[in-house]
Image (tube, rainbow, N blue to C red; front, side, top):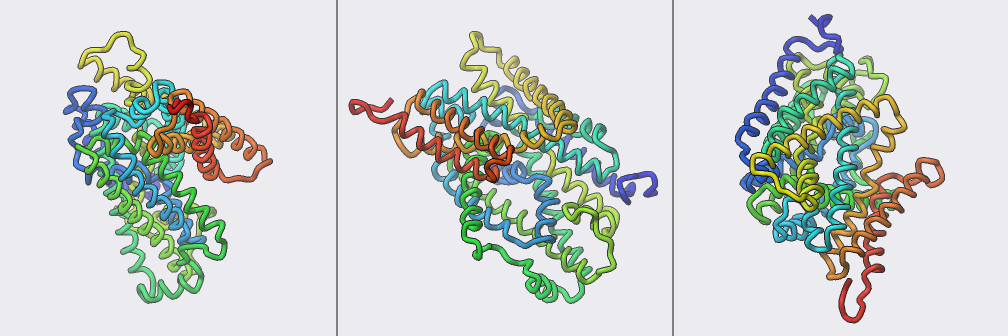
Length: 484
């Protein structure tokens, strides 16, 4: 049977589990799409979605293949110091829940960039929405490529069939269903990811000798349970700061995330969704770091077991070589669920409401607006697939695209924070601050890529946020008792 499936030991049962879950998610998105009646329902679900669902969908939007595959590998090779980043991210989400969210709901717009338009003006709104569309499309293409590499390798299909499968799923489930589909399929994805993490821990605990006590002893002796690097204060505080700014950018300025909580009924519900996502993300982190630690103990106790050529794939390798059928299919499903990106409705919303509507001479009919929104989402799905093909053949472009999100994320945080915290700034000041900080970030990225400035891209986001705030203050000094 395994000879029929060149994915390295997968059987018909594994494929059945995988395709059943993928078909279930696609059918869910398609059905929800049939219930959408207008553009408001497509972009915001009529603000009727329950906040627990929005919170779980936020977790799905944050989780990637690097969570399901990368976290076990990090715990296997190193320790639990990834928790340092979570501390900063948690603080940022509290800030978003209690400061950003109420402002967005008070503004009443479909996107956070609409709030920028009310607070500053059209230039700032257009620049922010355009930056989101451009960088999110690039990031979505990178995630699609990573998904094709991970899932295609496990399936044994290669790049093209896997790309075609993911593109069809995106169009059928997400481009058709809009925000309701993005949220409820996100709930589906998060549920699968959490279930697989928990089942993997239980399976590994039955395979290691000595139970939890022995796991703790071996892992602690090897330094695998270290959660913070206090020996290097700069690394600890750096992780907190980059985690804080990065998470503020994701949950406060990136409409892929903000759309989920803007689809709830009010600011209180949306804030609850953001805080729930904090707990959900922590649970994913703990589950998959635990998987990595248990894998370390398992292979420590079984030194004759073969290891993969690259430790980055230790968890899929273990699943293929040591897990029973069905469990292998569940692990494959978790990798795919973590890889499927769902920004199509948010990209369509930003394009249609922030970039097209303010400049449109004629407004489409109710049915026409919904159709245009779906066509835009479908076009973004195809553009993402085309860029993934480009990145697959041009590694240099892939590297730059991976880091491009940092160019505008930090400046957006600086502009949003300045607008929320002060009364300073008009459209020219905010637009100028955003543009100047983004150009500075571009310079830093170029110097880093050329080897002249060894700086991690996470620090580029931090620098951009502070630079934008400084530029905002400099460009909007009070003149004659008023602010411009």
